Length: 348
Image 1: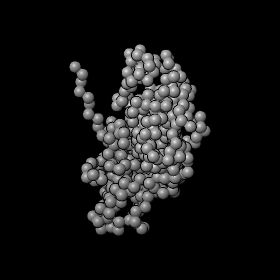
Image 2 (image 1 turned 60 degrees about the horizontal axis):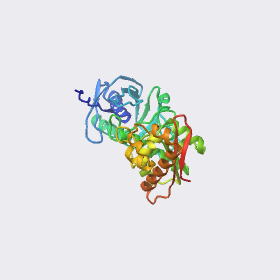
Image 3 (image 1 turned 90 degrees about the vertical axis):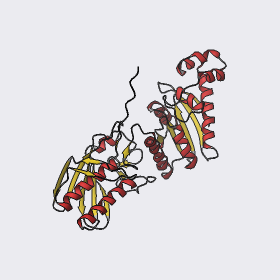
Image 4 (image 1 turned 135 degrees about the horizontal axis):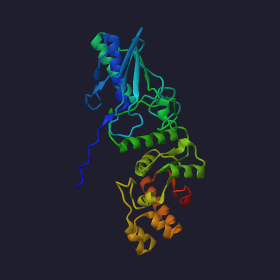
């Protein structure tokens, strides 16, 4: 008998960790003693406790660090130290980017150009902590908060940040404060931000690809800049539906024939665990009953070659057009083999 699947452990966003670090630092500077752990309130009411990994203070300032625990999610920031330095005083709550936290350089993101890459929800969470502790200690609810992630600039190279125009490090993210393992919504949100930046910077052509090989082939084919390349992965539906509401003049979908076959057959999520190739249907398209008993699209391609490529890209293009509806977006589809060669195209 198979063992029951292990329940995946959730974790905490960089925004939640930064909020906990701010609370620990402010407690130290206003309360006179750093706590060993702090409890914060997340946007949906959860109240997790965070261990304070480090704390220090100087004249008029204090800082504290929280080690991020992303649970069982393969998050590049898992184990990173999120540090907040607070300097009470001034007007309101201001945010600064320290070591390893990026700065926004392109329009289209929810934070203005020139600001540290600290998203709106974490900003509200940290502001609420300042107000809460100011009331507790009889202080003015005003402070400068500098957020740092040692090594964050290196980690950011593994994220979307360079393409989104976030320079110098990571973003402080999170809408719920919780990291849900292998979150589809987090990936799709990153795709949406990529579209937002492309639109805000005037790009007229974007490409969504299923992987690194198809990305390199499509980028070379059209000479597209990095900002136009959207790491769509399996979430073609998440990309195309967003473009339906936020159009860009031209869209290219690129991928291997196996994933494009699933798209051609109507799948919007191309992950192997969530959609499968219907070989009976493929046999009907190719007018070859033997295809129904094949195990992989590669086998089909080895027999039918160019014919398969033409049918799959044409039908995949029909699916993309159907998802776009009347949106002013002109799509095309590019099929790429494992060696990075373009083997079929459909569309203008």
